[in-house]
Length: 366
Length: 202
Image 1 (cartoon, rainbow over the protein chains, first blue to last red):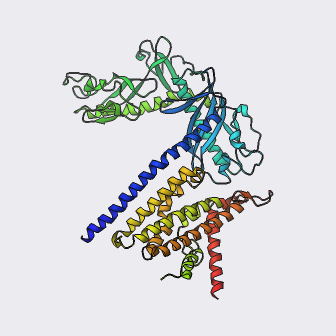
Image 2: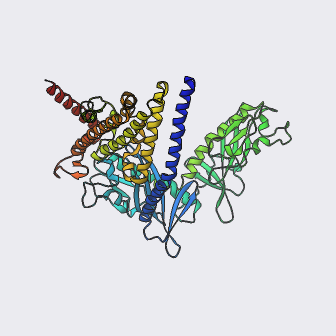
Image 3: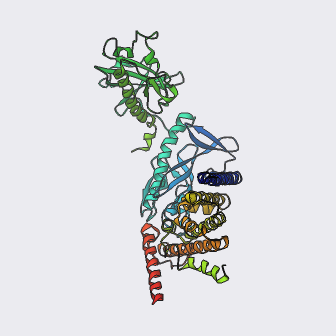
C-alpha cells in the first residue's frame, strides 16, 4: 500500500466512524431534546394562557399563534413567540394576550444569555428574595392599547403600559419592551387581517385630494384612502372587505415619463394587474410595453404582472420567467423601457406596502 | 515503564507546573468568556475533562496507525466527534446546564488545550499515561476556571455558586461579570502564580 492510499484510508475511516457514531447518537438524543423543548414550550404556554381548556396552533402569514379556548370554545387568549436581540444575546419571549388584544396576560422569557447578575434579571433577579421574577411579572395585565414604555426610579402605571426598567440593565429591559412592542404591532395587524377579532379600526377615508392625482384615474367604484402622502384605491366586495388595493406610480422610461396603475392583493403579496396610464416611448420599440405588434399577444408584457409574486423584488429575466420567483421577461429591443417599469414598481410597491400594511399599527404610534 | 510516581507526576503537572491557563496560557478564550459565574466555569471545565480524556484515549490508541501527514485533521475529527457527543448528551439529559453553557460547548473543538495535548502528548505516549495527562490538564483547567468564575461572581454579584457570601450591604462591582473583569482577574491570577513560582525558585 502506498503512502498516499494510507493517508486517504485513515482519514476516510476516521470520518466514516465519526459519522456513524454521531448519527446513532442523534437517533437516541433527538427525541429527548425535542421532548424537552416541547415541554418547555407547553409549560410556558399554559402559564401565559392560564385557565384555558384547549390550546390550538394556527398559522397566519407564516407567523404561529396559539389560541387558548375555554370550556365553551370561546377564545380566551392568544399567545405568540417572538425574538430579537438583547444586550448580548438573542431573546425569545412568549407573550400571552387577552382575546381583545388590549392586555398582556403574562410573558415568559424562554431564552436569554444576557450578562449574569444584570441582564439575567429580565428572567429572574436573585437579589430580590421576595419576588425574584418582579421584572417579567410587571407585564401581567399590562395595558397594550398604546406602546409599552419604560421608566426609571418611578412607580409604573400598568394601565398606561408602563414598565420599570432594571437598574444596571436598562438595555436588556428596553430590548424586552422593544421586541414585544414590535411584535404586538405586527401580530395584531396579522390577526386583524386574518381573524374576526375586533382590534381597532382603520383610519377614516379622507376626502379626495385633487391636487395629488387626477380623479379621472380612479378606478370605477373604488374607495379612496389617503395615508400620509400616499393615495390608495380600495376595491371592496359587497360585504365591505377589501379585495384589492391600487395605486399610481410613475418613473422615467427611455424618453418619457411612464405612469402606471398598480393593483395589488390586499396583503401586498401578489400583483393583480398592471395598467399603463401614460407613456410616450419610442414608437415600435418602447411602446411594446403596452402594444407589441411583433407578438401574437400584443399585451404579453403587461399580462406577465398578473398574479406575480412581489413579496421580494421583481427581477427582469431574459428567459422564461417564473411568477412565483417574481420574474418578468424583459422586452428585447426595449430593455430600458421595460426595465424602467420594473424599477419603478419595485420602489413604489415597497413604499406603498409599508404604509398600507402599517396603517392599523399606527394606532400604537403617537 | 511508568511507575506509580510517574503517573502522579503526570497528573500533578497539569494542576500547577504546566497548568494550561496559568502557565501555558492556552484555552484563554473559554477561560475569559464563560467564567462570569463559578458554575459556568466549572461546567465548561467538566465538558473539557470529558472531551480531552476521551480524545486522548482514542488518539493514543491509534497513535501508530495515524500517518503524521494527516494527524491534525484526524485529531480534529476525533475531538469534534466527542464535543458533539458531549453537546448532545448535555442537551438531552441536563438541558439547564446545556442552556447555560450555550455556544461554548461546540467551541471546545477549537480549544487549543485539547489539540495541544494530542499533538504534544497523546500521539507519543501509551494510553495509561495519556489518560492521566489528559485528566491532569483538564482538572487543572477546571479548577482554574472555577476559581476565576468564583472570584468574578463573588465581586460582581456577591455570590459563589449562587450562594450569597457578601453581606446585603455589599454593592456588587458590575465590571467583574462583564468582559473587563475577566481580563483583570485572569491577569492578576497569572501574575500571582508567576510571583509564587519566582519565590519558590529562590
